[in-house]
Image (cartoon, rainbow, N blue to C red; front, side):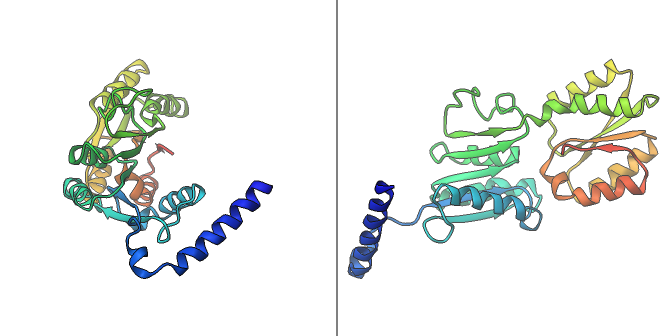
Length: 253
């Protein structure tokens, strides 16, 4: 307790001293650190995630606008915009680049700089996707967290099979940049269950509508939606379409 009181007195005294410093002296203080936040989607779909990110910063003593600034860059679902947005953050000399749940955003940031730290979150294996060299020793300037959601695909197919034991044709919805290993694992799992899977690809909002039309045309009996920033942003559209076409579906979360 004594140490806390002493620290508070010290900080109060320091604050008073800073207020008394001339403007020229204050101008010489280091600039506020800047975090680059690079995301494939759009801000309106990720308000809770951004709020959680700010909360995490505040719990470590960083308050946006007070002792840290955040430069947000949104690709609005356009993969081709990510390299330019990453380069812009590097040009602004941010202290760190955060790329939440987007392999493509992380790759764009990694390609744009070898010195600025890049922090990712992903549902994929970061070693298999060449983000890091190993889980224990990432190496380079890229590190982060993984939920390994990609490992759940075969398990989810198994759950669908239990729910619909007589079904033989399932559809899998993947985004514009699917991982070959993910699709291969799903095909192997489907084969072991005596099922066939139709791989449907969607890189835009319109593609999602087209994928469901194809799903109905091919008479798929159930749908597995793979984790993706695009699908997360369009989750209401996905659930609505699945209900409209009466297709049993399972999602990443």
